[in-house]
Length: 154
Image 1 (cartoon, rainbow, N blue to C red):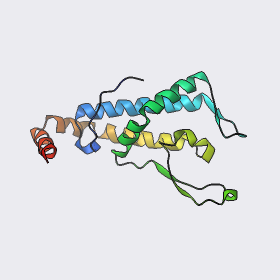
Image 2 (image 1 turned 135 degrees about the horizontal axis):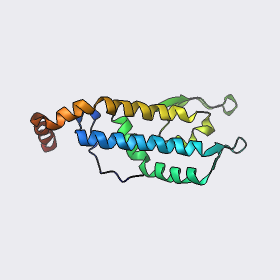
Image 3 (image 1 turned 30 degrees about the vertical axis):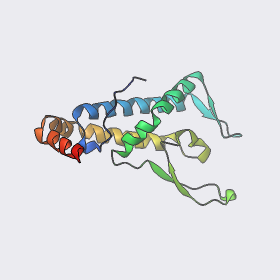
């Protein structure tokens, strides 16, 4: 996976075209890595563990390196990638919210298909794609830069 420059951690409505593009590239590459991981691994029904081929192990390593940053970028797109997890009745546990991105390697153990997490990644990609033109306008707008300076000085 490429090394991405550090982007500002502001809401998608408050970033430059360059930051928007960097986030979009990272999300797209991350989605491809998730596909690669799940295409090259399978769930052992007895142990609940993933059996990983070498390509899956490589993808897992890259996913783990970028997981926190991708999670923040998704949240900054005003997307909450969680779902109500209901454990098996025999366990006696109550349901709770489970973050599908941060728990991406635990989805199979909880009977959640990987597509559920991929859907949230693709929604974030769509948010950033839809915001390309507004981010360009912000970038060339001097008032945007003045507001950034005023916000930083507080």
